[in-house]
Amino acid sequence: MSIQRNRLMYMVKDQNSFIGDHFFSSWSMRFFSSQVHSTYLKADKYFITSEKSGFEDYARVFSVRLADPKGRIETVVRDLESEEAAESEIRSLLREAKSLRLKNLYQNQMEIKQ
Image (cartoon, rainbow, N blue to C red; front, side, top):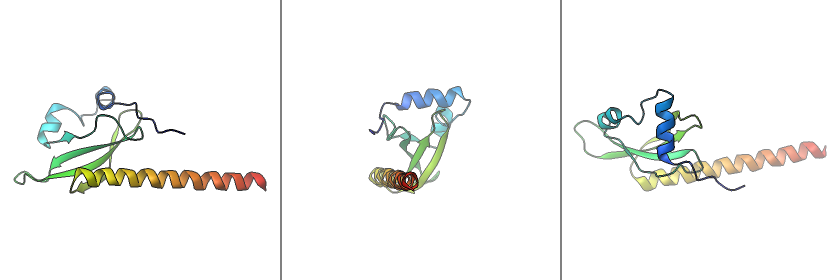
């Protein structure tokens, strides 16, 4: 099974707007000083954003977000110190998901054999 990498961020932004959410609206992005650091979704669900950590603090913090197939956005991990740390979190999430899929596959095969 290959990892899909074909859903681009502009598609997610359009989906999010279509369902009436405002995660990517210009005023929301400006208010939170948000930036999107991904062109496409990793594993067709994860992307990285950064925001200023406070109104008077110019340091940026990074977050891993999840976009569901309908365009809803969920925060998975927040307040990371760098984009590299966010990328590392995504790799860890993907490893955990793969491990869980393999474990479930093994359990299903054992049930079939019994």
